[in-house]
Length: 81
Image (cartoon, rainbow, N blue to C red):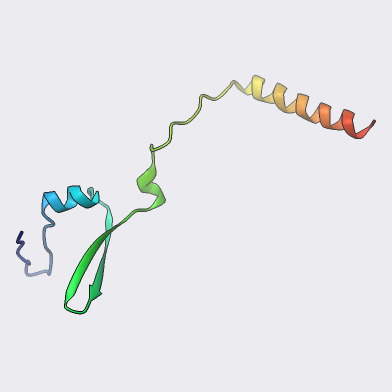
């Protein structure tokens, strides 16, 4: 696989390579030099994992407040025994 270096020092990473290491637009990459060889590594940030985990449904504010009050009441009741 070949790519041409532009006057600005830019190259296009072939699609098969991007797909193989999971590079998508706006990703960051690292270049690692080992002697005369240069490796490219996709750098994943926390932002890249956005949407990877489904969020659980949130209860209503009233339900959350009632649950918190019950927990506090139980703790106070236990402490006063």
